[in-house]
Amino acid sequence: MLNGQGMDKTTTRQGTYCCTPSGKFLGSVNSRQAHVIAKLLRDSLKKWKELKKEDRLLDYDPSDKVKDIDRAESRYPKDGMVLKVNSRDMPREGLKEDDWRTHAWNFDFAWFSKDEVEDMLPKKFEKNEEWDLPEALVHRVARLHLLDNVRGQTNIFPKEAVKTAAVKCKVEKIKKGVVYFDMSGEVKLEEGERGLDASILGKGEYSVKERKFTKFELVVVGDRWGRTRYNAREDDSDKAPIGYCLQIASDKPTDKVAPASFWEYGW
Amino acid sequence: MIRRFALALLLLVPLAGVFNAADEPAKLTDKNYEKTRDYLLPKGEEEDWAKVAWRTTLWDGVIDAQKEDKPIMLFAMNGHPFGCT
Image (cartoon, rainbow over all chains, first blue to last red; front, side, top):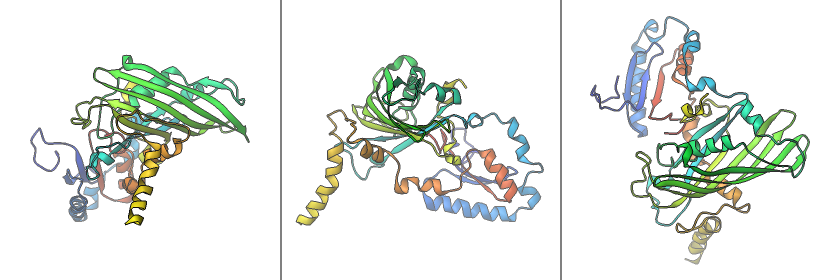
């Protein structure tokens, strides 16, 4: 069923749908207006109540099918680390307060396997110990996640677009089995007429006892330029400031979505 | 009038102290690190959508809806609506 406005092949599939566990269609609409969604829910609930239980529900336990579903989310690194990557334009002159684009923000998730997390640790836990985060991981974060997606979807950067991407770490102190460390670095990406030139600062905490990062936070601020087809920069492709904040994601269902460009991970 | 101006100035000063104008590269420093981080993170009503008891995938929703005999609301976009879209 296409979304709401008929069966034309060009009609968008995006939007909000209501259905029964058995797959019976109850309604759909493509709108971000609260009152439109509220009407969809009321109308769908009315149809739901008119259905017999045997029509509403599946005649088998859907849990049995989980093993047959191959989604990226099934590779969620529960013994690794997930960072939520928040992106937003930095304040600048000339933006209009009543324009949604001024306040736009977006987010994605960066995944790290257990082995990758272990590769991010220093050789020894000592005050003032210095080390670099693995180049391959920093490059992956840079080209897949430090994107101008503030206003909408965009393309990843190819490997050759990474001109610089490095993060250095230094242990600040060790207290009660927790290693506190600072991070700093830079990233420069260039592909054709688009790019990013930014500096990186961060703070981390690693629990030796739990063998995991209890805090891993990176802030990235710099200039972006250029545009891609769907990132809504048609009239805003000159160099302008952008920022990112990467933090350990929660374990809520909303934070267990796969990275937007998961296929590039090769997992 | 002076009070209003003072309030406006108070509101502007924190940003002016942290961020640069459009024609200068944005500078991230140890001093403005926390303010910059807090500015970048979603806050207030930007996080209202997460109050809904979403499931990560459609099938997670099917499993729970089947157990609880409830209908399913599916929000589908180009790109996962809980992720980058």
